[in-house]
Image (cartoon, rainbow, N blue to C red; front, side):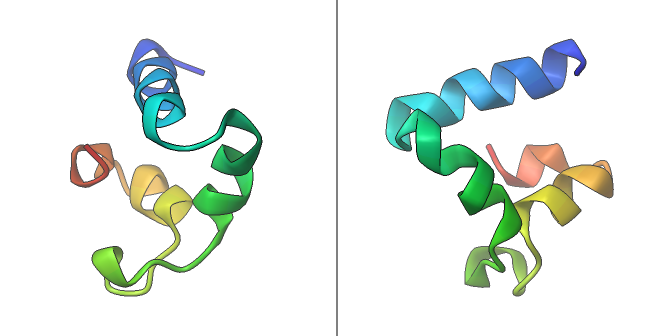
Length: 50
């Protein structure tokens, strides 16, 4: 995991229970046009998550 991903996970843990981050990353999300947050990250668009 690179620094950008670690920073994102740290930021997510402030608003999402740490145990729920993994499942959240795997669920389609309407905020990302029904893409999974992980798919957004894989596309190099992690700034959309912020």
